[in-house]
Image (cartoon, rainbow, N blue to C red; front, top):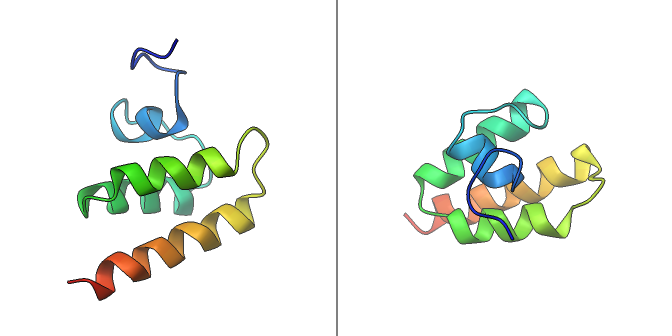
Length: 73
């Protein structure tokens, strides 16, 4: 059962532990979306693309999520 330690989740690895998991673009998008309050949605997107994500598709999904959050401002 995940308990927030490194390796439990790509999301917490990137946001909480400051690890680089995917490409720099994806890791930066995850951190930026977290700062916008999108933690649950980002976690859902990452989960949808596991266990072997296509990074182009993952980046596109995160960019779309970012557009949605920025449109709500």
